[in-house]
Length: 443
Image 1 (tube, helix red, strand yellow):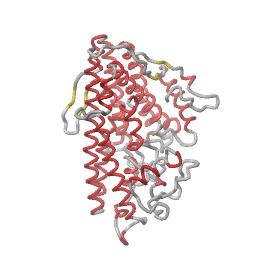
Image 2 (cartoon, rainbow, N blue to C red; image 1 turned 30 degrees about the horizontal axis):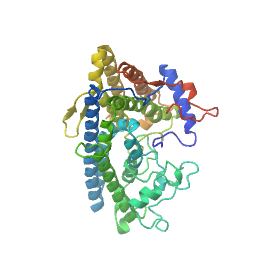
Image 3 (cartoon, rainbow, N blue to C red; image 1 turned 135 degrees about the vertical axis):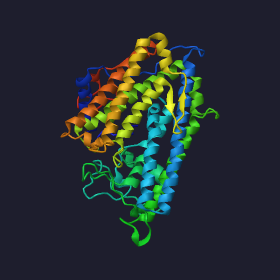
Image 4 (cartoon, rainbow, N blue to C red; image 1 turned 60 degrees about the vertical axis):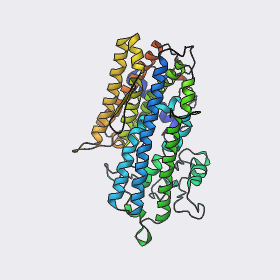
């Protein structure tokens, strides 16, 4: 199941363009990491590394849950007293909550429990017309019969807004992935509203009065909008609790227990594959290069809040975390332990240095995008950087893509050095004759 932006009706074409541009920019072989097992004794040094990987997952998801609970409190305050101030507070907590969660996404690509769950909490893009009112100029995904359902306004067809409706009936309704009814980005839309890009620096401009009751309500249906926001925020907290439980060392029969019962080399392979796929197939290709190739402002992860720069940075940081075995918790403490780096340095100190340097370079390139968005003189958000008329902005995005692709090549070298089999795929075999993705390259 694909949960991320790949464009709309022409997504496979953009993916093909994206692949060709990456090849032209860096001329590096694209990689897909395999899960073929190698025999390893449980006592080998891989086990502490994999165990710490699970410890880090528990910490990251626990921090994500803590901030989701804070978000729930801020939403309750907004609904109790809808003002510009309480709306801004809820928005700020949402932005803070995305920081640890962004660092967790590297776990998705090699852990089935995360991949199967992730669509409920982080799916995008979403046809926001499914949820609430939109601009008359809004165009939903081609052929999406629910793209303008406006559930909040439609009490006839959807009389009761609750978790059952959102998760079981609306989320991916009609087998359309753009029908996103739950998760961070549904909440984001309800807090910010559409980003209509009337001004280059605009983000969503939803007024707090959309949550007032009685005659003061703007855009109608405020009671149902209030209910939707409350329910979807509660669902996010519940979903994150499930993931915390799945990595909790104090519980039995969960995913953590299953992971640590595998051969340690399999766990190490999961770590390396997650790093490689997050770096290349997801972040460099689908999340960044697709939008750059199309010069499409809508091709950004957190489009309503214009905070995609944070997504890019924290996704890149998440990859580095796994290699170094380090995660800085939201209380400022550093969780550190046995790492892939500590394994590699015993085989090849220069190779360890190369990957550490590459990871630092990709993070620095992503930080340059963040610095541009937060500039006090001439801020430019991620959607502005994608414009065909912004060569300097394009260059910032390209630099990050280049760095991510370069680090993926070294991740493969690390994999081979540690005795983990890898599968190299010729990019020319990724597409069918009609240009559609044949599924062989996972791009």
